[in-house]
Image (cartoon, rainbow, N blue to C red):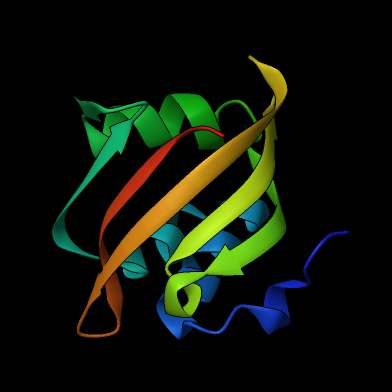
Length: 107
């Protein structure tokens, strides 16, 4: 079962997922604090390089399966044109109403 975007309880996480799924770079950057960081499968990544490759130039898309930890932990089916579809986990740190860090990896 897919959880609709409007059911995500944290507004910062909801804005992040909405921008990702819309491939809207400006809205995505607006959803993040300046200097936001991220990791993929436990390895620190350059946020701009990673998001360009994994989301924007490869049409990344998330379908949310579960939400925990006050809306800061998601399990989603993530797909893009490079890797196809995989089950992924996402954890978010939110500061001042924006995402300060996200960690993702295979679930």
